[in-house]
Length: 338
Image (cartoon, rainbow, N blue to C red; front, side):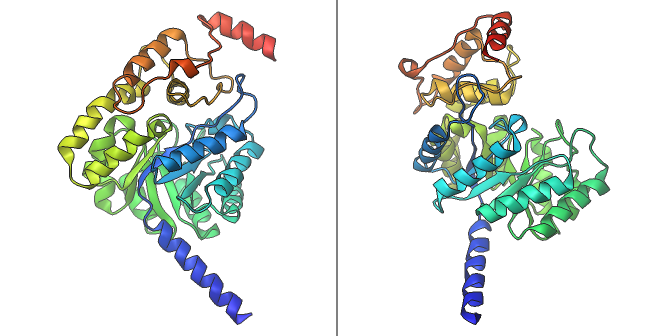
């Protein structure tokens, strides 16, 4: 029995040391589905994980917002975690999102993810009817006390209670609250969080190189689904101090990143990422309703933006589109499929 206890602590310490260096480019993984967006295709999911690893990604986020987390069932979320951890092995770190409305639901999800073997968990603050800062503090602290793995907090003021500077200063003093993903799009705010002492992972595409130059330890990036090589190269160039080369590469990447962040077709981020991923020959299937398909005019814009990339070109010969030109046609088709 004493030997077993000793071995356990050695393994646990190695695990914490491994995750203490969470950095680089982590792909906010798309969730592959059938063409109707009804069921998850685990075969494509595993193949996509393999491609992310082969491209040199530094980690993957399972059940990410980009992966349509808000539209998945509880069983599907857990299936993505279990299969993702099993398939990755220990090649790169795995981070599982376990965001839910109530603190107890988050704790339940966090314990499940920890038992499955993830290296860290990511949690948004309470949303929908968010509490005040005391409530956010309680929420994160309660989860942190329930697990023994790092937690990536998530600052996304457009969707949930914001993590202010004062609140963030208190949160990072709590054990296991080690990282924050910042998707605020506020580069000044990111620099303030870095100055406080936090380990910041940027989540706002248009500020990718600038956040890394400012001191972010990495990015949780949906665009890594369709341009993993470029994302990794951008990080490496900045990490090596080759800033001129990094900005030359960014000049090729920024068109699609800016388009995803706001476009004339009002295509949301996760739908745009899935379309771009498909346009580069990685077919992730359809999106889940109520998310509509991307119209042909928007796909034209995405294709044009992708054409500027030095590595990934659009592969039209591999595309199979269910092409509806108008919103009305999509609604009619959706009704027929139900």
